[in-house]
Image (tube, rainbow, N blue to C red; front, side, top):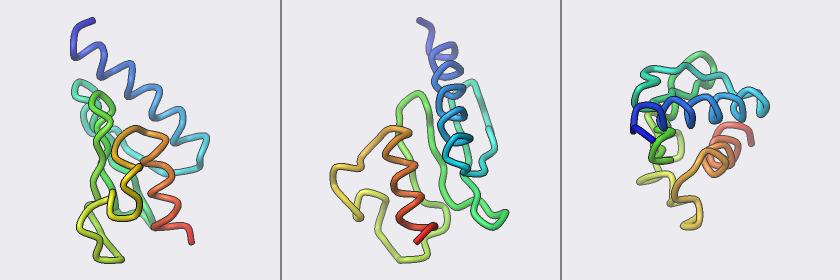
Length: 90
């Protein structure tokens, strides 16, 4: 499967899970699977569906990165959702 097609398919799947989790999000670039997650109408995290990598763009707790919360939460949309909920939905 071509990387662009893979990214688009994974982006669709990630968006489905984010919608089910009631997490507001915007697809920035489906060709690379880039999705921004929002909290209070601000971008707080970025997720790349093809690689499963995610980062904070707003870091309210001064974590160095997302895996500071738990080293098992390294990649993937399900882990991204868990980190989002831990950070922004206390």
